[in-house]
Length: 161
Ligand code: CUA
Image (cartoon, rainbow, N blue to C red; front, side, top):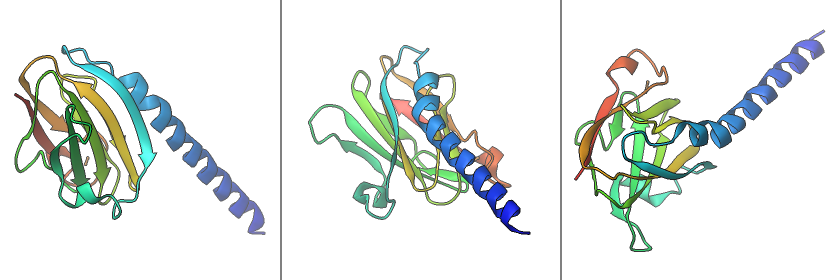
């Protein structure tokens, strides 16, 4: 009697997984074309073990190991971006900025207001994408996925200097 129920539930899960993968592969790639003078070079969503990824223990802006541009490690959680909320993220103009964004709890969104830099931040995954900002400026970071009662307060700042 419960077989049908379990079969149905499995089917829903499978569809949900495929949906997540397809969104990860296509969603950010389609969404992210800079309309603000920024150029977005690549976008991927990879599986990442939060605990094993050292730079997430101390999130922030790092010089890229290849000497070009910077890597930014950001942890989203209810209801802040670290860094971003307590202090602005500072990145250099005209250099490749590789964002690595993950979440410590539930699914969040990461959107640079006024641009098409936009990705979901899914537990157990790292959203990774490159952006080259051609102009200096200040951008608001907003969470665009409902993540709980404080969702509407979840925001931050990114400064291109
Ligand atoms: Cu985080 Cu909405």
